[in-house]
Amino acid sequence: MGYSLVRIVIFAIVVFFLIGVFFAWRWWEDKKLSEISYKDYEIRLAIQSENYEKAEKLVQSVAKERSPYTPLALSYMLYIERKGQVGGNDIKLLQEILSSLRDKELVSLYKERLAYAYFSVGNYQKALEVLESVKSDDFNYYSAQILKGLVLEKMGRGDQAKAVYSQVEKLARGTYFGNLASAFLMEER
Image 1 (cartoon, rainbow, N blue to C red):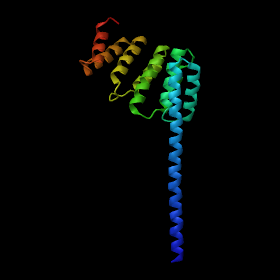
Image 2 (cartoon, rainbow, N blue to C red; image 1 turned 180 degrees about the vertical axis):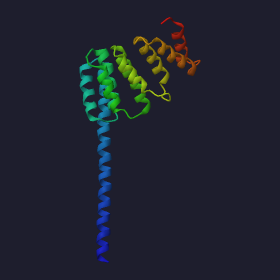
Image 3 (spheres, rainbow, N blue to C red; image 1 turned 120 degrees about the vertical axis):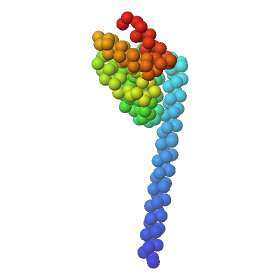
């Protein structure tokens, strides 16, 4: 009888200890996220006051944390590089953002942004490879297909570009992207 009572007491102590560790971990995690959210606020203030160097340092500190705020902070970096002329590499930054995203729709959006970055620097093959990974059930499928058509045109593959535009025109009839595809098909490209 005494032996089983000791086992029950030890078991209860272990359970309470594990529950305490769980709540301590949650408290620490919430504290870290609160600190990071304040840094996000500071980044926005720095950008609004055009203090891009301070904003860049804050973005780098948030990105090191690898939290749910990381993709947002890295997106700020794209803005900072354009506005503040801090310099950098959109492709590398977009790849880093993509690697930290968990949301399927955001992944699809940033794949299209990465493809456009490759397109902008003339790396058409890489842009095409990235665009191939945007699936027909992704929300930005039609805009990615329009970009794919533009990439194919730049690669000298006009017939394939027309086929892509025709597909978008057919599937997205009456929408902005369907109309855009129709316009591209009417042009002598």
